[in-house]
Structures are given as structure tokens and as C-alpha cells.
Figure 1 (cartoon, one colour):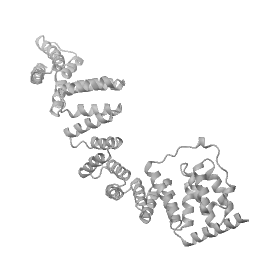
Figure 2 (spheres, rainbow, N blue to C red; figure 1 turned 180 degrees about the vertical axis):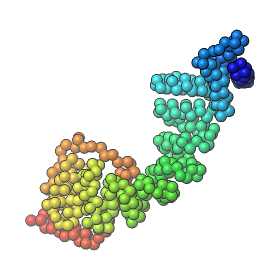
Figure 3 (cartoon, helix red, strand yellow; figure 1 turned 120 degrees about the vertical axis):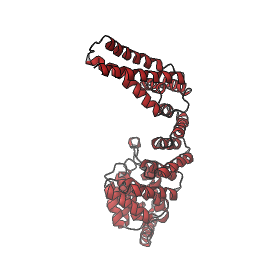
Figure 4 (cartoon, one colour; figure 1 turned 90 degrees about the vertical axis):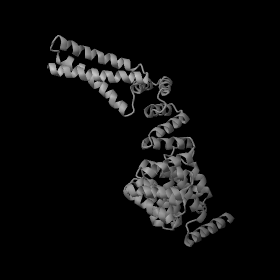
Amino acid sequence: MIIERLIFNVVAVALFTVIFLKMIHKNDTNYIYILGIEALGILIGFLGLIFRVNLPIIIIIITYIISIILPLIIIIFEMKGIYLSEIIYMNIAKYYSNRNENSKAKEILMKILEKYPNSYYLHKQLAQICEKTKDIDIAIDEYIRVLDANREDFETQLKLGKLLNVQGRKQEGAKVLKELLKIKPDYYEASCLLGDILYEEENYKEAVNVYLQALNYNPDKYELYYNLGMLYTKLNDFQSAKEYYEKASQLNSLLYHAKYNLGQIALLYNEIEEAEEYFVECINEEDLTDEAYYYLAYIEMLKGDKENAIQYLNTAVEENEELYNRATKELVFKMIINKIKRPTHNENIKKKKLTKKEIKTIKHLEKTCELVGNLSQNDMKAIRILKTKYQDRERE
């Protein structure tokens, strides 16, 4: 027991000396608190040794914690570049941030950053708090400093790309993400974000390459196939778009947006029955129900079934005046438009849960359908016949 207490005191005094020298070297008074706690543990151990008192086990454990374990933890942290003052102030700032006193938290962090201007952890915590308070420009600057301190913080690099994109600095965001993917090409989230940015910037071919690269590491991600389908749609490569939409639908049978686009592509190629099957499936998706019924009405008119077309079109435009106005401009609906009820309670229309990318893709397909019709001489002939009948009816 005496030997154990002697060893304890020697080790404790040695650690006390190390912490004391750190305080002198860094001129940091925060070490005084640790030294005071250590001194208490050393004193208890020393008194126990002098008076040969068998200390209770709980007291012995406490002395080991405050005199050996605590200073060892501090030394280990500082070997990793995390200093005592940083730890103290970071926890104080975290306390204020958790209480939504973010201004106080930022003030504390900025004060300690004057002493440790290159601190990776302080800059990162400050960036996170600034992001929380919507001070995005400051958050961006702080994340850049974080990366200057640690180029292998891939999570922060992704975060920086996101924030630059949010601030409209898309080219800068894309550059950050490209650099990230050079180092870590299998980073799925970075690939998706870069692809989205390139899509918004209309760099469709480059975005295709990004998603194809991502497929090498994530062959089972249906989102990649779906995104490739949308990109090839914008490139007017409808055959490739169809292949990727089909693969996405195979991996996720509930991906009705892909099926809706497949229905439109089928119409472009005059594959009426295939288009009908896709649009029937899309009725199950709330966001696409109205549009699906609209195209089913269109198909029924091409097939010559006016009664079904009227039923479908009334369902489509029931609460969607946009579709009603669109139908009035479609030549194929001229013969039945007077039997379609104009919607009267548009205030109850639910907002679509589509991304900007999905909306742009769908609109592109719709415009393409309007421009090229059904890419079929038979359908064009059918429309001309309907037009003639309508004109004859008007004369009567």
C-alpha cells in the first residue's frame, strides 16, 4: 500500500509539473483551476502517506481521477491540438447556444479565437452557430478557415458546398464539390449536390458525368437513375431518358414521377397503350393525379372514346384551373370542351411536393409534346379529322 501511494505521489507531482509548465509557456491562467484540483488530490494522498491512514476506496478513486486521469486527459487532448482553454470556452459557448443565446456564444468563441486564431475546433463551432443563426456569409468564411486547418474534413467541405449554393454562389460551390470528389469520389451526397448545381446551371452533360461516376460506387441508388433520366430529358435524348427512368422505377416501384415522365415519353413515340399504363399508375400519386387524368383524357380522344375522355378531363380539371385553361388550347379537346366544368374553388388546391428540378423536367416534356405532337403521322391525321369536324360543326 505504501509503495502504491509513493508511486501515486511521484506520478501526480510529475503531471502537476507538466501542467504548471504549460501554464507558464502559454501564459494561460485557465490552468490554475486544474492545478488547484490536482494539488488537492496530491495533498490528500500525501497526508494519507505521512500519517499512514488507510483512505476509503472512494477517496482513493477521487484522488486518482483529479490528480492523474484529469491531467492525462488534458495532455492527450493537447497532443491532438485541442487545448484546455479551447475545451473550456467551447463548452461555455455550447451552453449558451443550447439556451438560444447565440450572440453570447459567438462573442465567447471570437474572444478565445484571438488567442488561438488557427483553432480547427473553435472555427468549426463558430461556423455551426453562425449557420444556425442564418449568418451564412460568416459561416462560409468560418468553414473555409476550418478547411485551411484540416483539408480532410470532408463533411465540412460538403457543408461549404451547400452553403455556397444556398447563397447563389453556385460556381464556387461546384468548385468545392469537384475538389472533394477528386479526393473522395465515392462521396454520394457530394455527387448528388454537385449534380443538382450543374442541373440548375444547365450544364447537363457535365451533370451526367457526375451521376455516371456516382453509379460506379452506388449502383443500387434509384435516385441516380432518376436524375440521369431527367438530365437526358433536358438533353432531348428521350431513349436514354427512358432507360434510366425504367431502371429507377424497377428499384423503387413507388417512384411515380419517373413513371409519369415515362408516360409522356411513350406519348412522344406514339406508344399509346404503354403511355396509358403509366398514367393509370400515376393516379395513385397525389402530386400527379390531376395531370395523369389529363393525359388519360388525351389518350381517350386519340382512341376516339369521347365519353371516357370527358369523364377523365372533368376529373383532371375539377380543382385545377391551369389544366382547364390548357385543355381549352388543345385542339384534340375542342369537341368536348363545352362539356367540361370550369373549376370554381381553386383556393383549396394543394401545393405540389415537386422539386424545382422535377418541375423543370416535366415542363420540358410538356413543351416538347406540344411542339412535336405525338411524332406520329397517324395522330396528326386524327387531329386534322377532328379539326375538320369541329369546323363543319361551327358552320352549321
